[in-house]
Length: 271
Image (cartoon, one colour):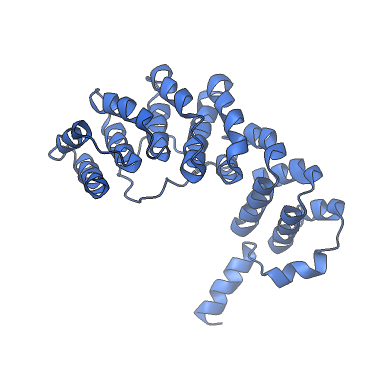
């Protein structure tokens, strides 16, 4: 078996399928497809999720959520997530319940490296990522989590709100996130996530003042470089912003230097 064939087999073990693989199953009942979500074969689970995605039968929402929580195979998990996001708003309450409950890939400590990519950071929590793909209908529900959810769950909701804003330009969550800067000031991970989420609200002047206040405060380096990055991502240039970013170019922390330089480069292109 050559290397390409081996990679193909490995992907298939993780649930990778082609469109033609679904054809023998397209006439299966929704009940049968739901049962297939429990199959031992990961490709069968993917096939089930793909067909349920296209069928958009709302009776599949809860079984899909159970499958999402338990799925270990990469491509099957992606297909299940896509099926749920395609269900629209009816799937949101069930996904909200799953925030922070799937896997252990969520951030639990501040980063050690500056995030250099231009895109909004990939949301790690699988339920939150699914809600980002679902989009604007999820925003009001996620806002509620900030008020009534536990801290860890709120952190995943913050990620999702930033991701939705970046993807859809939905700015309804901005006042709530700005308020949360004060209410979650002592929770470092939550505070950092809020600062990062603000990078999703591009071209919104309302983000500028909170980020400037963060940069003028006494915070851990990751929060400072995240605030600098968010300022750059907003792409609004003022003399005050440029001057503030320049003041960090010779900071003793290397990652802050990088963040400041990158922000200045972005702002120069916006002039």
